[in-house]
Length: 142
View 1 (tube, rainbow, N blue to C red):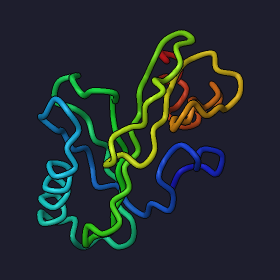
View 2: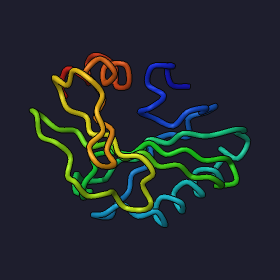
View 3: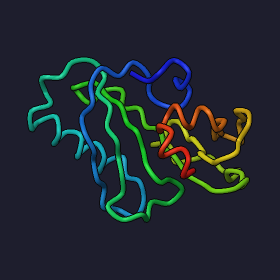
View 4: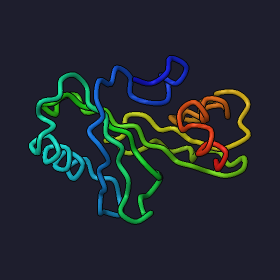
């Protein structure tokens, strides 16, 4: 379960980790994600209870708008919640366009951000929360 101070940056109330899912498309596809989650659950994760979290990565770094996703669902694939993350250097702001309907929350990760802000529909967390979310080694690369 995420630390209390990062609940606004990742799905909450996760009870288990379903592993890493690699998607092949150039754009995020809710259908491809759901099919991959279903295959994972059918291959032995069906014994898990509660909300299951998945780290979702592209096979090659070609997703439009996002670098990675964290998705959560119940074993019956109900209530799928998708968080999209964009990693940026410098002070660039998120685009003033909403993210695809399949993505429920967008998080813009950039270094040297002092306070959490909201740009359109994106959450832009401060540097210390990025470290809490990713760990200090990964956060130092942001």
